[in-house]
Length: 122
Image 1 (cartoon, rainbow, N blue to C red):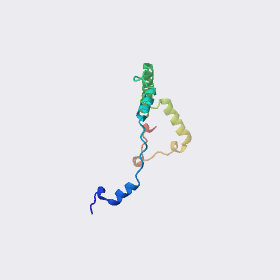
Image 2: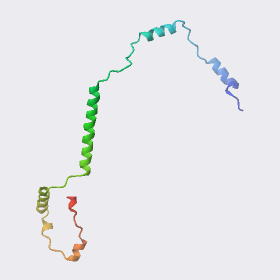
Image 3: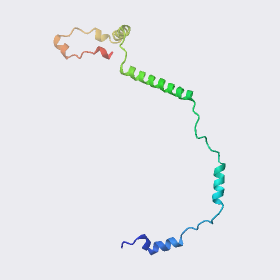
Image 4: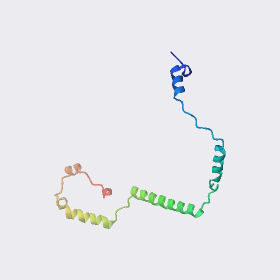
């Protein structure tokens, strides 16, 4: 039952009948290949580097990193609105929301149920 591949007669017979034919041997093939390899142009072992290119790429990388970090900082810490901007917002709200400015005074009990607006939202 546990026949090794060497003992499988069908496999050995199949491989003997279907084996590939080896190409004819060429005695000068190695010499011709070595001659062709010697004729190939060789690259220089040391690559000449331009120091100005390295400094230019470093400068560009530094500028990009600074602009990205500045943008992220400004997004995380938005500037405070100026008094002129707050006045303009107040005028806008008064012009387009007249119902809010004409509301009657509320009782003290009603004021507790109101949600106060946070001025930092504006």
